[in-house]
Image: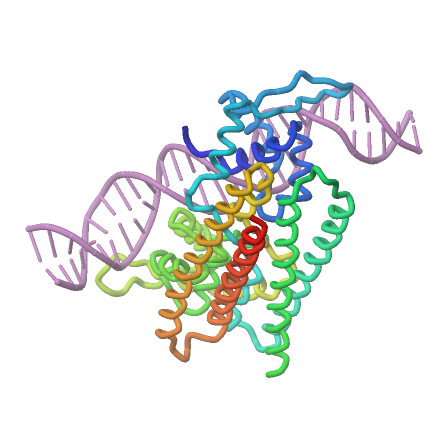
Length: 180
Length: 180
DNA sequence: ATGTTCATGTAAACAGTTACATGATTTC
DNA sequence: GAAATCATGTAACTGTTTACATGAACAT
């Protein structure tokens, strides 16, 4: 039994809580795991078919008016999910940060251009934080008891992280301005 | 003139300081930008050929014993690099964090399994930080005046970031242990 | 009626890693 | 003379985004 593909990990994970269609999975991940584990239709639908072929998920008998194919975990799927969650393998960790890359090359810029770069980058992270805060408040206000605890722990991480990043860039901005 | 490809951005950036071969670029990025902007041979060599065809880089007359093709920026290449560094477009920002993804699904685990997950994840980030600290010290000790300032600013970011992440997971670990 | 959302899907393009092939040069 | 490093490259695979196509159901 080989490793779950990246997209299989989110899919099995969200199906762990309740059955969902591909469409549902996309909608949910778009407001939750997106910030640390995204997924697009182009991955989700083919991956659902593969997981079905492997016997890890199965389509529920479609109910309701619309053309829906809600999937649920099979026992084998729940096992694979649990094995992944508790496995000891090296965790995939990956960052792509263009602001930092530009900063790395900052010596190619004039003092003024470098200050502008830092200011713009700081501003973009603050906008990101604002958007995230709005989303977080919305999610918190819709929170119910059977949502579980950990999604909100992860949400707290996102908030704290973006706050930290913003503070770092503000600090650098102050430093450069003090020299200028 | 369209956007620079992801790999073109690092390549032009490192060539901004001095001419280098594809091999050199790989070696340099592996100990510097790797943590926020990686590149592999499979991207670097073809991209160098494309950039040469577009007139943004050119091969220097090969000197020395080995079969080397050191590239330098053309004036058009330097212009494209400067345009990118000073452009106002939305910065690419992307995180993939499997520890966080697993944590998000933590409600599927028993209390003990969840604590184990957090402990293991915290330990992995600490190992990452240790490795990074070793690299950082090495780089700092080899530092010369004409290295420029900003690579070390970015290095400082990496250090502070990993320290923050480690602290966050330690905090969560304490919290869960206090309940257990 | 008409616009929005629900819902599934695919094709093409783009991005990235890994593993391999090749051979020269340097170091021990 | 063997091993390590320098150096360039490609092929195959895996992963990911984007844009498009299709059509049903719901809301106004």
